[in-house]
Amino acid sequence: MDPETLFRFVDVIGVIANALIGSALARILGYDLIGFLVLGTGTALGGGITRDVMLGVGFPVALTDPWYLGGAFAASILSYLFPFEGKWSRRMLSLADVLALGCWSATGASKGLSAGLDWVPSIFLGVITATMGGVLRDVMVNRIPAIFGGSPLYATFSVLAATQMVIFQYNGMYQIGMGSAILMCAVFGMMARRFNWQLPRTAYDLRRYSERLRRLRIRPRHMLDDSIAQQTSTEPTIATEASTKGVAQAGREFRHKLRHKNPDEPGTIPRNLRDES
Image (cartoon, rainbow, N blue to C red; front, side, top):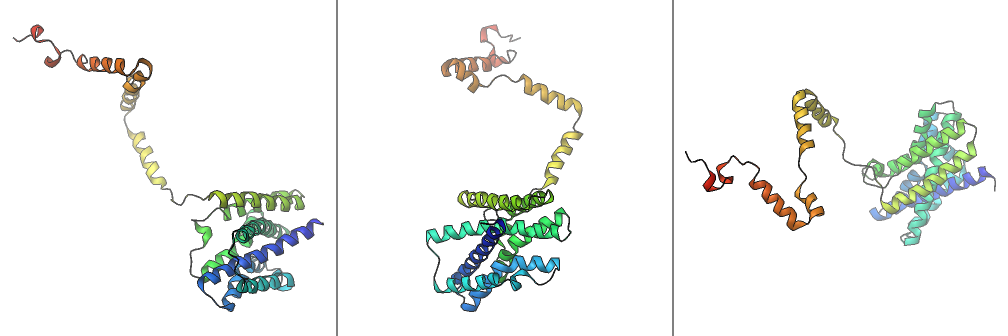
């Protein structure tokens, strides 16, 4: 099969899969057929239409190629008639989704480069193409977009795939870039869903760390030297000695050190040797 035909096939499969995913949310929320069509089509074509409008290179591909709009409508109606709720149905939709993630990320980045944009705007267009449909779907149902956190990695792999495509296409290897982007997103996307890989959700506060560094910096030099000397001269703990000498022997030696640590104190000197004068 010709590589261009294969990439186009993956592209259309991604449109159908994302239309089914958007329509599944419409079933959960109890929408009617119009709701299925709007959510399904918005999820499937929102990213590509946004990309083409931002590029301003003519009519969006979704409006000129009958396979895109027709596939999105057909998948939405099919999801309205048949619930895709089985285990294998969800797995196949997940696989098609991550395949489309790589394909759309690479396609958007490629179109940005072809339009004369630099690397960073091209990568940005690739991410917009791959993720804007899901964002539009969540906004339409008044939900926080899933790519903002709390879900397996998605937009992160889109950034990597778009960057990968830009590097390969810049070096004249368009087909290798497209294929490797699809493969990378397919493998790592399924692993992220299997093991629930997520980015940290707690934001850092660098002021706390800079405050600690500032306090260490303004401490006198001799205080730092004394603290270091104390740490280096600290005797081994009883736990360390117990591992080499045995618990009973280490305990006896530890108690002996406590009794004779300060021999000048009256409590540690035998009564008959104390100076009572």
